[in-house]
Image (cartoon, rainbow, N blue to C red):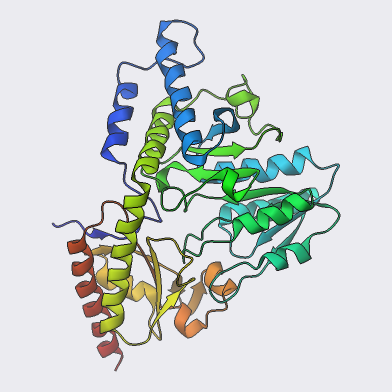
Amino acid sequence: MIRPIYLDYNGTTPCDPEVIDAMQPFLQKEFGNPSSLHYYGIASRQAVETARDQVASLLNCQPEEIIFTSGGTESNNHALKGIALDMQKEGNHFITSAFEHPAVLAVCRFLEKFGIETTYVGVDSQGMVNPSDIEKAIRPDTILITVMHANNEVGTIQPIAEIAETARRHGIVMHTDAAQSLGKIPVNVRGIGVDLLSIAGHKVYAPKGVGALFIKKPLILEKFCHGAGQEKGLRSGTENVLEIVGLGKACELASRKLDVGMDHMQALRDRLHDGLGHELENCRLNGHPEKRLPNTLSLSFKGLEADRVLEKIGNEIAASAGAACHSNTIAVSHVLEAMNLPVQWAKGTLRFSVGRMTTHSEVDRAIKIIVKAIKEIARERL
């Protein structure tokens, strides 16, 4: 059986072969605990610090401003809960967008139990947050603004530098979830001016189960995990050396391959868009047409049901849906709802995301498969 064409890189990425090679020794002979002072701990300890340097280099920060986590979700949880706990005397108000990943929105809802109030700012029809709306939402008790760097569903890149400048003028901590942007576009914490930034390894060709959180000095967060004091005491527990090494190597590769990777992904994304748009009617692009991740293509097909299309192409293409239909009800993603996408379009939304390993021939084959499937579904409806 021929494996399906993989067009879901925003869901997860395969491990880069160089990442696998870098991790290999830590599956075998280099098994030591980084906290051990004897011979077997030295290589592991050095490997963790090398990875910290590699992540910091990609983000343009100091290595001591990086702590390793289990992934983007934990990084977001630590950032938000850490600020809520550490700054509870200064205020109890967060500002975010209605467009965020559940790893931010669910934390905000959880913190309501502890007195944190959150204002959810809307986005326009292209998924863009207006910085002036953020500023209007600021209150005397606002302690955190959190807006994602780039959206996972439609790819819209937010004006984080402008929002961060607003936060800085008002003395408010600024966090961004950069899980989707890292490795696809430049992510420079000094350039965008954030205080906290979350990344996830499995979005950047590293393994699942590892991530990092940038904490700008001298900002202090409440501890996330108590124990023996690893990761500067903020996240205790024996380090996941194997995957930390993988994340470090992935960040080194991202730095080295960024420009070429951006051009490659954008060319394939646009090739896919042009091919589908030429063959299919009632096809609508979601997200900002220009300020968008170079690999992300969210398309809505009017009057169709996304899960029906995925069912039709599932043996040949791996992609994701922006809506699901169950028992005559339609569950549209909160992202499409925030953009006020009409339901007749929203229910037929598919997300295609290419990556470094995607080829031109795969895209050309995918166009033929998708076009054939959608035309067959249209004929079945007649």
